[in-house]
Image (cartoon, rainbow, N blue to C red):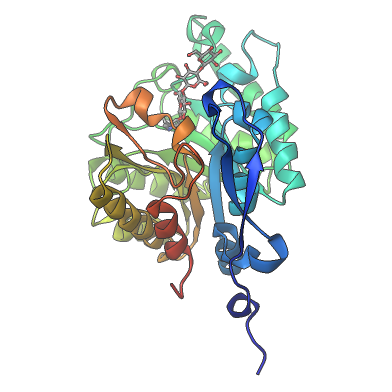
Length: 359
Ligand code: G3I
């Protein structure tokens, strides 16, 4: 009887001494657990995800991508998908009107292609991270419509065929399920959503087009608002293909209704993805909290993968060293699968076990 390659392969850890990177890495040598690729690629996160035909992604920041080998070692070994944490946001791409800065976005797309990783595009129409020329431009509705269309045509067109999914619309609901005020909503009305999706589809018909939001993981007023909008868009033939559940959780706080909630969207024929998973802990994190966080990573992963049309899970960063959490939630951190020295945490095991159906 043939042996499954996964069974025969054993994890071999080969510590690689790295040259210290900048002042942050102090004098002590950093070691990164390096898996010998031919021996055990199947037991990495991406190995398990590939075996299930889904994506395991990470949000990527440009600075460590270009300067820190520990970062790229883990990224390329463990993840088969990337999202630009900031590089594809409008303020990064077009800081002055008509003057584009594609550097960091192009770097990420090239990196992904060289490492057999898919790219999620993030994000086209959002209330935040808008360049000041746009935010303060006092444009008329007709001008704004033209500006948004041009942004979508240009950005989606540039990466046509290289981005498998786009967060076309980001964070467009209030907690009570009503539409959130934004430059787009206030001036163009809710119709901007259908338009943005249609323009993105015309620019790249092969990309899956998403609406992405936070606090929609549970069955609640906000996810109800989105559910009703999604149903309406689909009934109008608008090219909406998926819902992104950001999943910025607090330890112990994965909603009990998450799987059923994702399933109701999947039942509409939509893809569902966990797009920005992190699970923050009050600092300093105790070992009990790290263990609970591991359980939470597994549960959140299984909640998505247990639903038809779950396309994958993306974590919002790789290492606690660069997580957005401590800068935003005072006293919280330790939200990701790797610690600041790139050691895998219990949450890595939780994520891995969530991806591996035989764990
Ligand atoms: O680019 C400037 C740089 O020029 C300047 O020197 C520096 C000084 O603070 O700021 C830099 O911009 C920062 C940017 O990240 C790039 O590092 C912004 O201040 C900072 O606010 C921005 O934070 C990002 C945040 O989105 C912005 O809204 C976080 O890194 C990023 O993780 C976060 O990601 C969002 C998703 O896009 C949407 N869902 C929520 C998620 C977490 O907030």
